[in-house]
Amino acid sequence: MSNDNREDFHKRLASLGEKPNVQARVPRTDRVGIYDFDEEKRRQSAKFPWRRLIAWVLIGIVGLILIKAFTVNKMGEESYQARLVELRAGDGWEPYAAIVVGRDPLMMLFERLLFSGGNDPETTNAPETSSEASDNANE
Figure (tube, rainbow, N blue to C red):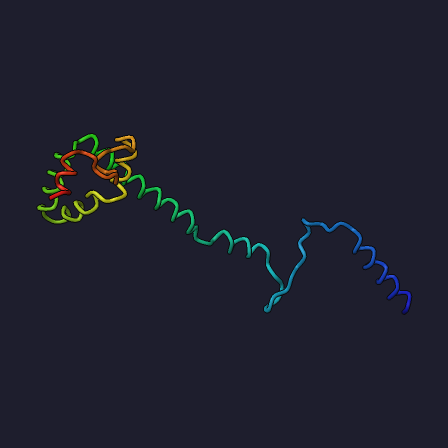
């Protein structure tokens, strides 16, 4: 009896020094019974890819804003505003479309960066230096 225990002890001691086999599947137990590795793989692959969905939604929003900025540049400011007025006065879904294609701060930022080179005098916050500005300030 003592020989069996001793042999078992030496086998376990020898296995501690060996390099573990990473590919070996050892059945683990959970509360119900044997742990199923294939079931775990199926669960992992069945998760919904929220990060990918959010990334595509953000790409779509930025793409829509870029398309709006290029449309304003191509049509011209006056004709774009006239079309927005027509859409706001329309029936059905047209007023909602006017809200979607209307100008927003992010769209104006893209317009400024893409088409005016970032140095548009109307959109900068620099103080006015003309003589008219000083005359108006003195009054």
